Length: 204
Ligand SMILES: Nc1ncnc2c1ncn2[C@@H]1O[C@H](COP(=O)(O)OP(=O)(O)OP(=O)(O)O)[C@@H](O)[C@H]1O
Ligand SMILES: [Mg+2]
Image 1: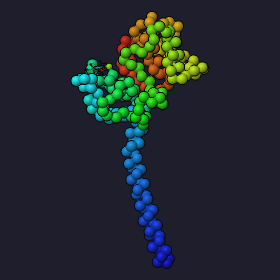
Image 2 (image 1 turned 30 degrees about the vertical axis):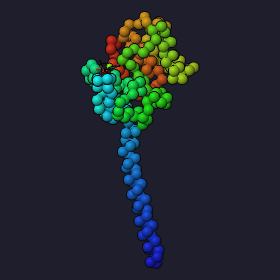
Image 3 (image 1 turned 45 degrees about the horizontal axis):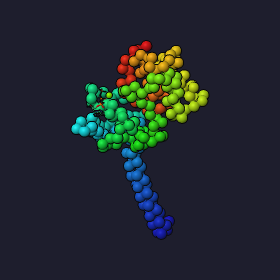
Image 4 (image 1 turned 180 degrees about the vertical axis):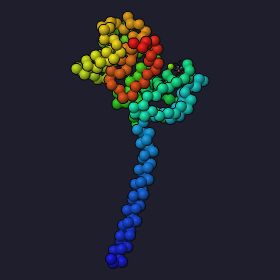
């Protein structure tokens, strides 16, 4: 091999190595990010105050896809406030929330992925169980056969099929909770948030 050719190959080898090292470094950096982005829910240093009351103080946790996570704490610990920040009802004072890699829970495409059963019932008392579910389904752009099937499936799941034509205001506390739950899952969300969903619900 000529001297020139050998020198050229060495330079080429050096150059390839440099590119490789830069890519490796970038890839590692990216991995640090993607780890968080792969989490369904990632909360970092979340804080929320109501006047002088510190409702949430530097809360961090991660929930992976497929994971069931229980947030436990006594009355006033800040559980509902945390959930309300995750779903975008409340704005954190500081900290970061990532839902399936996205930072803004108020975005339509993220909202579509969230099912939330609020602690306070969120159903319409003057609509029947079926009408409630049709209404919530339509909010998520469900219609026609798909909506019909989802309503049927959800009513069945929560054991309200035989009461589907009754007004929600005629339901017992536990039955209203069941309807609340059905309304949260009507659009097949990927992320389910339940805030005390079983209050008054018997194991039937
Ligand atoms: N809208 C509000 N205005 C003022 N203070 C509030 C408000 N909402 C909640 N708080 C206060 O924030 C703190 C946390 O309340 P939060 O409802 O998040 O607790 P929680 O853990 O869900 O309690 P519980 O188990 O009773 O449902 C409490 O001290 C509460 O009084
Ligand atoms: Mg609460």
